Length: 289
DNA sequence: CACTTGACCTGTCCGC
DNA sequence: TGCGGACAGGTCAAGT
Image (cartoon, rainbow, N blue to C red; front, side, top):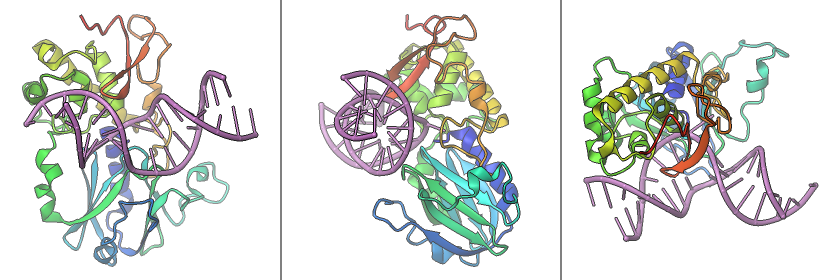
């Protein structure tokens, strides 16, 4: 999915687009194929207004005036696209992304009192939407176990390294993808940050040095900040709240660049399988040893 | 508890 | 131009 930078991009968009709006109707896909349909969502939504849009890890939190919150996970192919009443006229080039909504991947549609709409689309149906009393969010099992936000100002390199101790017997990529170690890292930014820190993804956590952890910390934050600045990565389905793609893939250094030269040393980038995921490395910069 | 693998879905691409 | 298999941004529930 959308990893931290993509979810953050959606959050910033929704913050500007839907805060203050009042929900007047909710519709969702009731097909058997959508097991995450929010059966109890409508009764807490109708008449409520959106007071805040937050993010924790890869979860979006829409706070409502009713003291309830709508939690949304986009997983691999989820989209949250806002369509305002008069945003684009017919024939506008940007209409191509949104003029067909709702479509067959639309799972939830919220309609606001000014007739604007928010669509939750999800081709692969892994995503979910849940309603919770706002004050209970922090007590959920997920929020109890999820690791710290890597971009938080008070998140230090020391804390970063210390979080990995519980996963010392696995490889660094599997640990980096573990949301209970650090929040928000997915396959793209794992590969990009490991390349930046010159660490082979199959290196055992126990064998990664303090200096290497410091480099990984710095690279991870840099790559995520750059990705947010570029509006995230769009390989295929990801779009922001306005239906637009992000451009980070134009800046990617190894991810999905197998066969191309490493931007640092020109060695041909290779693709392999690590932690069950497609993994991209420069075999010269990132050695197993 | 920590670790690995397969499952959840739909769509696309690649080789035969 | 059809068909099978692998693969795709993420977690989970199982298995060891």
